[in-house]
Length: 450
Image (cartoon, rainbow, N blue to C red; front, side, top):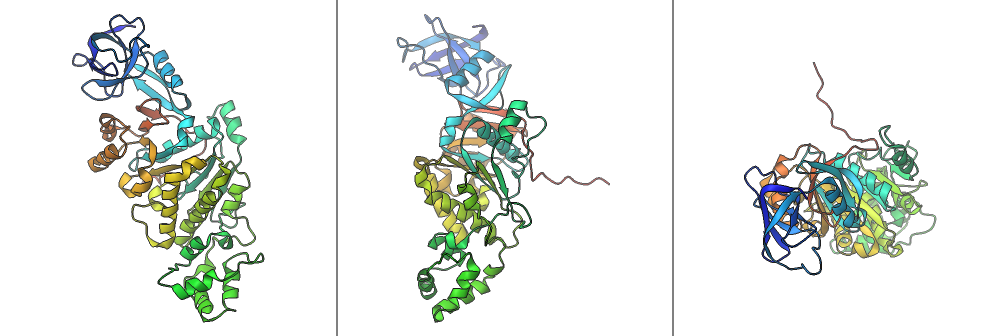
């Protein structure tokens, strides 16, 4: 270990450490250094957690030294091999970019097993949030066997099956070998995004019909007593049979017509529904929610997908549910019965889904836009540039595993930089995202020249 001039470390409890260095000594919050207590042969890795040198031991100094206090110890800069060994010891295996400590830069890796917890990615517009999400998802696809369902409101991930020329031969082979289904609103496409009304749970159907069991008790009861037959394909069949019923049933048929539900593009009819595509064994299902004329349609198909995943939870199929621009589908204050029921189900998955292998990956611009009962269940954080002091304060309070000093640096992040912390990170680290391996959709429109 090459010692740093003028730097020393002390520990009052043998577990936490204070690292002192002269002004301009080159040690910043988040850096990993090596500390060698008196009498020890091998140095111990320490991560500095704040701007005044308070840190935590990252390696066991040995059975005879656990809890041992020391007043002064040599300090040295961590080398590439030390940072790589630290990540390997934590099981970090998914490369997402680079991690720089002092003058040393190494590949930054996340723990694949850490995605068995819910994740929140946050960053203001222009921070590189969508690009970073793509980088992470590509590595999860290459390095794990997770099934993935992506709710994509802006068509940002429709190119996830289209591999770039820059990808290595090994990466390209792995990505091209995946069963990636991209579903969209356009019925002329090979795989339109659809839902089957008659296969939805009754509560979800009632939400689509905007029926309240108390306020609309007659219509609601009439609907509950309608038998769904094997020949029924979608809502047009339901309307036909309602017209054959009593006054309450006919009133319900008028409700459906008045809401314009018969003209929705999203009904499956003879086509496969999105949930049927997922159930058929697709490794990745990208639900492009853009392009529908009625704003209720994308929320309804998202609700159907989430409901079916929950209904099939007993299969315990490990599934990563990615919700991009999550404030559209899981807002802090849901609007309308469809979105309200969707949020309720996401809250349930956030609380109970882990034991069934259902894990959320939410992406949004601000934490305050996401329902707090979902956000509070996230054990992983990816934070990109965030200028709002209020948002940083909220993240600091919500995610206690992320060092406040590192969170506070987010306003200075350049595009593509991120703080990663939680169960999927070897240590809380500021990383720079690497290159995408597949095509990115939904890019910003450039200002035309004159």
